[in-house]
Length: 192
Length: 156
Image 1: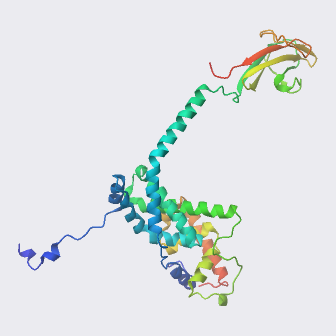
Image 2 (image 1 turned 90 degrees about the horizontal axis):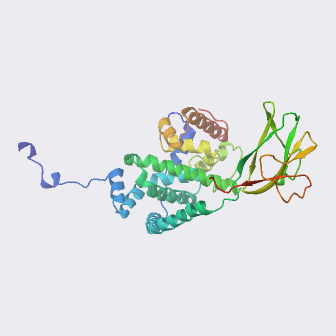
Image 3 (image 1 turned 180 degrees about the horizontal axis):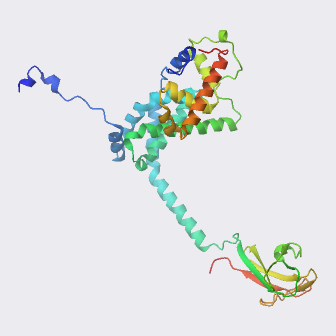
């Protein structure tokens, strides 16, 4: 009992526990559809950033993300590994973004919000600006942009990227390397 | 980040800035989720009806568009060439040559849709003859005698 001396009632009061993805999914599958909002809130910000950077448009990104959330919901009953839900949702989102890009390509539509441009002198680019960063990343082909964002913006390991995209490690590293080369080229050939 | 040169690190830092959800995004997703649930029983009913319809169609439809391999065989021991002519190849002697098997047998397999066809063999490029093992066609309006084959619509 002496060990408990000094603890107030407040100290030992149970704190609210954040449910795991698996627990939330269990609730949803048991009929508590509203619990799915916990999943939406939990992953929206991170995934919206990825999709927005990838597609270059928040509107398109939210369309892809809404579609991904909806497809994940429809597939919840079939998905067994509930604690790896985030990876699964990421995979769905990546595929939705790819489909959306393919649709843009078929319509001969330029990538939204990414103005086309060639080589740019380093002086023309103010690196402090987010718009410039978004413009730069938009100059990469989709396949390079995707792995660049996953690697450096989402801070994923190459192994995780491989699991997510289905690409081999060497292909991922090659795309990252080419993406870096392209960005260096756009920055006027600066190398550090 | 260690792979990145300094100027690209600045870019990545900018790209890591959070993206704020547009107003009502969460509600839009949840509305779509609830709409999925509302449509689910209807989807099962419609899906079930469609599946039943397809099953009935496959069971009773004559499937007239499905071709069936049909074998033609002729014993012609002294022939150098044999061809098949009929309604299915515009009676063209060069369209469907038979292959020889052994010393005297000739055969060819032709894919035919269900139906009734008249046909003949052309031996050595000149001699037209009906199939001695098949029924003769009574409406042989191409002059020489011809035979008739009926391709059934379903497997028996």
